[in-house]
Image (cartoon, rainbow, N blue to C red; front, side, top):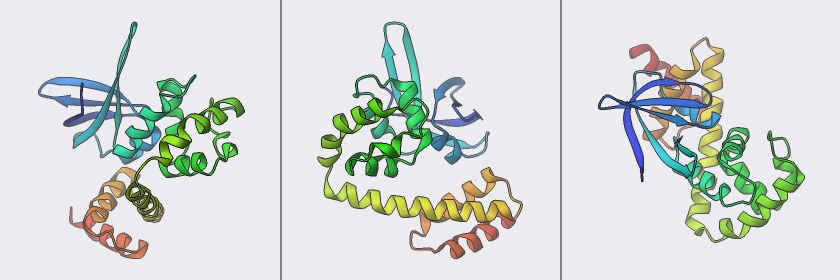
Length: 200
């Protein structure tokens, strides 16, 4: 029903974000991963959305990246996995790491996530492995590249945070740089981010 919502980010917590569009505030439940990627409140933001509908429930879920929304929807197909647990899984591991655990058939990698025991981990792999294998090879390559970019981003953000900058400020600067310069090293991203922060 809702593909995405673009508007002003009113507030963001580890599990919730509120976005205002034309005077209407939409409340999204989000993963910790999406929470870390969102800009500071007051900024414009685009959240991909999923409307979860049950007889007694009508709830919006928001995602910063399409691959996260896609995995959330796949997890909802697993018996015994509801939206709350699906978000916990997305908060506990990077999307690419979850994909790898499923494709490599290594349920032990999922055990550390709150709410995921041996039976649930085995069921996730059993139900989703074939679905992930059917994804195109191009998506697999993109996933590999995304994983490298994600690690580079985290390294750059952590380096800047140790220099005394706020995490939200450096995340915004780093994301902007990586969108324009995909071939940068960590050092190049950090140097460009410092320039961007000091000139903004």
